[in-house]
Image (cartoon, rainbow, N blue to C red; front, side):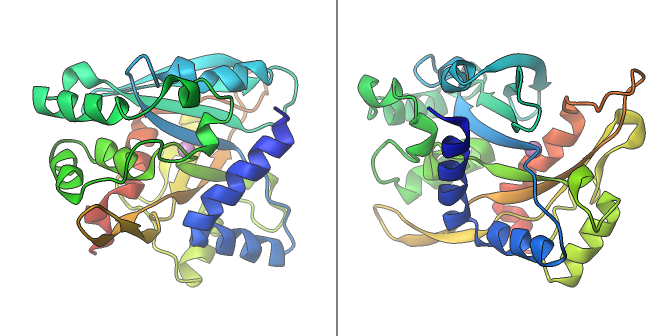
Amino acid sequence: MNLTYFFEELWKQYSAKTPSAEKVKSLLEAEGNKVFNDHIAIRTFNDPRVGIDVLARPFIEMGYEAKGEYHFKAKKLYAKHFEHTTDTDAPKIFISELLLEELSNELQEIIGSILDQTDADTLSQNDLLLQGRIWNTPSYTTYKRLLKESEYAAWLYVNGFCSNHFTVDVNKLKTFSTLNEVNTFLKEQGFAMNTSGGEIKGSPEQLLEQSSILADVVKVEFMESTEEITSCYYEFSYRYLNDNQRIFTGFIAGSADKIFESTDMKLQQN
Ligand code: NI
């Protein structure tokens, strides 16, 4: 699969369910910027059928290699990030997986039965990430049960495989020089920021600052009814030079931990 084609298709699917991202991108372009994508993020379960290795395989084939790894104890997540070996403009890939063995038996059983609805053929496709939800129409009762224990599990059950976010590379914007300026612009335009852990996560000392707008809310058809559920969100990153005068390319677990909450329905009610 061709990298440019893949990211174009991924953006099409993502922006269709994240209208705010398309709006923000257009607004930044109208100000005279070209928008570059710093990274995408993928959510999955650590079941061997769909774990990080399965979702990373097409990227490895397109020239990516594994770099950092991250632990999120409270959210029961493990993550790895991948960088392209030669194309420095290629977005980084952040893949997290929910550690099923740390969940209740009930949740393990529910998630196991969801994954039993998938077939090996679909799971082996290179474009798995473009296929969205590859299991049956979700049940609202099941969604609510998952939500009680893991917001991440509930979101993934409804949204399936996709890019959970794209990320504006603020370093490459022409008309903005700090993340704070971008945030101010977004708020002036009426977008709601994720303020969990502060509007800006990270610091110059950590070499990475991140912010995000709250996820869009879209109508989702469940077996029982149609409900409004969070889809995806747009993130913004500003990276600093490390001691070797190279731009830091990793991630900060403490910041990512708060960024995850951009899809939390509880933040929508403010
Ligand atoms: Ni991110």
